[in-house]
Amino acid sequence: MKVSNKRLFAQNEVFDFFFCAVDDLQGSVVPDYLVVQPRNIKEDLVSGVGILPVVDGRLGLVKIFRPALQGSFWEIPHGFLDENENEVNACVRELREETGIEISPGDIEFMATVAPDSGVLGGLVKIYLARGSLPLSKVQHEIGLEDFSFFTKEEITELIDSGRLVDSFSLVAIYKFFVMAGSS
Image 1 (spheres, rainbow, N blue to C red):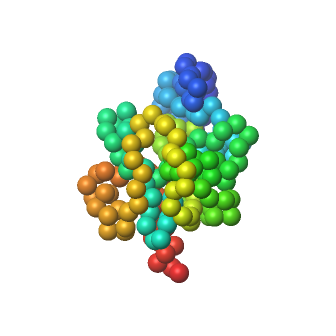
Image 2 (tube, rainbow, N blue to C red):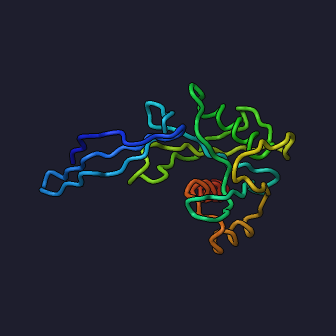
């Protein structure tokens, strides 16, 4: 495979949008393959974090409106890295902003790396587990953010089965959490 002729055609404050030519070297070429890349991305392609907060065995999720899916869904808190911010500090910040939970870097455990959509998005997200206590501070206003709540395993299963929890970060984090819990 060969990727060439990468050209920027649009950008906003979060993403750069490129077209490039993709050639399979066997006669098939896609001249305008779309690549969306976060503008703030590290050398290892990590551009964001997801955090699964756990308090007293219950999993914390935010309910957020997603314009691309035209609806509200339950997800783990997640977001982009700020400029020159490491993943652990991003976890502390995102968790405080979206849930009000205050944690220290020592409360965070790496779980997995996720490619949100490896066919289009040029960035990776690292997923972390955060063991903490109930929210202590006020949640910052964020467009689309509707609610934050804790759920049991049974309630999580019902959210997944009903299609109200579909986010890839969240599904990976929850799966990994229950696999880890089953092995201890």
